Amino acid sequence: MANESMSESYKSACSDNQIKRNPHIAEVLEKLRADENVTLKLPGNKQRQRLHDEDAMVLCKCLQNNKCVTGLDLRYNNISDEGVERLSGLLQEDSSLLSLDLMFNDILAGGAEILSTVLQSNTTLRSLALSGNKLGSRGAVRLAGMLQRNHSLQELQLADCDLGVQGVIALTIALKSNTGLLSLDLSRALLSSLQEEWAVHVSEMLVGNSHLVELHLGRMGMTDAGMERLADGLTSNYSLRYLDLRCNRVTRDGVSHLAKVLKLNPTLEVVDLSFNRMEDEGAVYLSEAITSPGCGLRELSVKGNSISAEGLLSLAQATGANTRLTHLYIWGNHLEEPVCHAFRELMSSGRLLPEQTDVSVYEVDGRVFLAEAPHSLRRRYNSSRKPTHIQSLPPN
Image 1 (tube, rainbow, N blue to C red):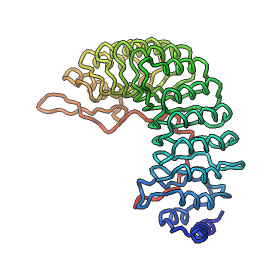
Image 2: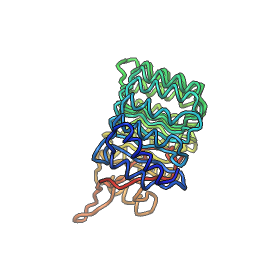
Image 3: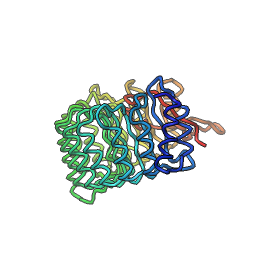
Image 4: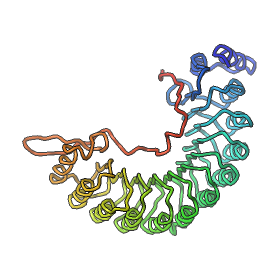
């Protein structure tokens, strides 16, 4: 659709439905280039007026027959289940959408059910982001049913969705047979059970699933027992590349189980253990794994783990010995002077590049210190699979 006709279509649709025009939407549509695939970016945190259900309805009318828009970013708006029902029209047969971002809206289980129904027959959407919507276990169960039939969706983000044990288990069961999903984010599920049976199901899923590349299990309340169960599944899995375990309750004992996996796993490349409590002994376990010939780890974060000199020096020595590990993040631990000297040596020798760690070296009165640097572990492994052409406007 030509630029002018899409802009005019928006104005006409607003007039026909007696809806006040959103100036931000109008401006984006006027500047839309129709000669390439683009992602329309309309995040509510970067505009004066957030989108509501009526805006979603009008936007859907404008994009219904448009083939150049392959991504829709509607994060941080006020779209509810009613708006989702309108947007679902863009996911019908002959859809051109590859990505749909609805993070942090007002979508509940009913909206998840609407999306699940339409996506059962959709073969084009690759990325669906629903993090921050209160879908609950009911919504998760509906999405799990969709995954049993849809094998074209590659990324599903469900962090901060108040998923309960039942929802997490349903999703992991669905992934035992799903052959399309590459990335799943279940962070901050509401798991009240002390037995961590959800970890058993995740472990069983990892044994049978040979397609999942990225798994986020941050803020799940995981303990050493859960980590042991997860390690059992990882032992038999050779597809996972990125494992996010940040902000859990894993100590040295849990890390010891993960270290045994890393010694023999050549495929797991990125591990985030930030803000657990491994201490020195856990860091030593990881150091032994890093120097093992069978370890494929390339990026590691141990930020905020109460590690002192013994553990950090062990990690520094392991990094110097194993050139496969290129990224190491340690801020938030006890950075004593011997540690500062060790990391200065790693960086001055070129073994650890400044942009691949979260500390920088400075010297005062002959003493060496480490300061926090503005770098961190990448949040997504699979982001390169998303559409690369972006259409956006600077925030007002």
